[in-house]
Image (cartoon, rainbow, N blue to C red):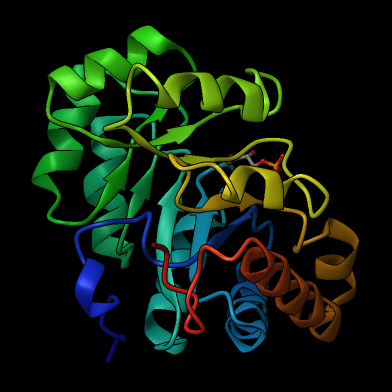
Length: 226
Ligand code: 3PG
């Protein structure tokens, strides 16, 4: 049995958790202990990117064996991948960019999704299509907090999960923005820790990430985004 999405925000990826680990799994046997460590550290929403041949097996394993995790698929870039990921157990979908075909497939999937944007026109185009929640990628390279702050004036209805180049030093600045609901990143899943099977280190890094997300004062004790 899988855990329910947080009740008040089941339709939104952005409200799952203030920090979403973005995970690249090379060996599917790492997926379950990795997910358990992240959940134990307080990060239940886990994005497994489709960047390795092991990704779908990793999603399957987490969905089946870590009921307290909410596993999603990242780097979803084709309509075909949408169905495959949901069938594997993905409970949310994230893409670095979007097309109309991808949007149609994501909408039809029945799970929450976050299409990626990096320009104002893409934000406007998604708003025009009724999508208000987006991934901002690659966050640091595309203008960082200054860019997102500038969008909040003309486009206050758009809400973002920035990812790409964010770390513990910059995450609080993003989380303090009114149009940012959570941040994504891989800093709490260092490749050397995964290779070494150092799950305790990953749990501790996850715990640190939860702490820094709370520091900005936007989240309640349960980690729910405002
Ligand atoms: C993503 O796909 O969201 C990013 O690659 C994560 O970015 P990071 O590895 O720079 O944190």
